[in-house]
Length: 130
Ligand code: HEC
Ligand code: HEC
Ligand code: HEC
Ligand code: HEC
Image 1 (spheres, rainbow, N blue to C red):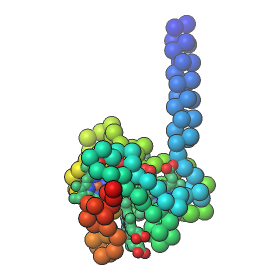
Image 2 (cartoon, rainbow, N blue to C red):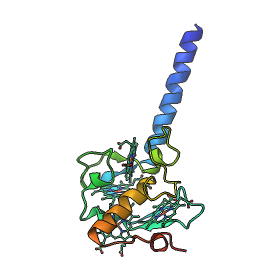
Image 3 (cartoon, rainbow, N blue to C red):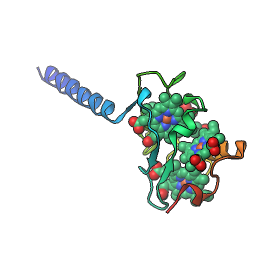
């Protein structure tokens, strides 16, 4: 009897968690023009990210690495990076609260490519604009 009650409570909890997760995810073919990355910002100003400039020329999965083969015409749910990288549940997953240029997944991904391509901001204040 107690077991049954616990099982149904568990199902409701999981159900609610799924609805919440879907509510916070975007849909691929409604990819944003531009995004303000501000979930972690405290020491530095938030970062304005021109999504379309990137998504028009760079393969989606370069950044959305958990959605392999993602295309602009897909209608699948796309989770924001912050869903996993804001307060990661494992020490091996990088945090976007980290100042480190090698550990913060945004710093690593964004700056590495800008340096490689010699295009796009690579200096602190060019991304973290007042
Ligand atoms: C250069 C990296 C990059 C590329 C390439 C890219 N995205 Fe994104 N995308 C992001 C970032 C960063 C966000 C904001 C995530 C956040 O708020 O944590 C985002 C957000 C999104 C969102 C909204 C997610 C949400 O709920 O906040 C969708 C949908 C999306 N992208 C789809 C796409 C599709 C489809 C493509 C390819 C056509 C693509 N993206 C290419 C980096 C990229
Ligand atoms: C290519 C763009 C880019 C560059 C260049 C960059 N950052 Fe960031 N940084 C980000 C993004 C995006 C975040 C996540 C912001 C958020 O989600 O609120 C971030 C997060 C941070 C955070 C944690 C959040 C906070 O405000 O406390 C710190 C600290 C930080 N950056 C410092 C720096 C410093 C210092 C430099 C230069 C050595 C630098 N960043 C260069 C994009 C950049
Ligand atoms: C569903 C959870 C999840 C989402 C969503 C997610 N990541 Fe990750 N990410 C991980 C995990 C787990 C790892 C570590 C293991 C691995 O490399 O796959 C990781 C690793 C990374 C790394 C490699 C770090 C290193 O040290 O080499 C980068 C860069 C990165 N993520 C950036 C992003 C960006 C940018 C987004 C959003 C566009 C994003 N991630 C969305 C879970 C996620
Ligand atoms: C795989 C390569 C790549 C990645 C990853 C990448 N960028 Fe870029 N970014 C570029 C290129 C190339 C340009 C130059 C685009 C142009 O001028 O047409 C650029 C330009 C920019 C610009 C200036 C846009 C303008 O209109 O002047 C900003 C801001 C920017 N990137 C932010 C980011 C942030 C924040 C991230 C990480 C979330 C990121 N980028 C990830 C390649 C990349």
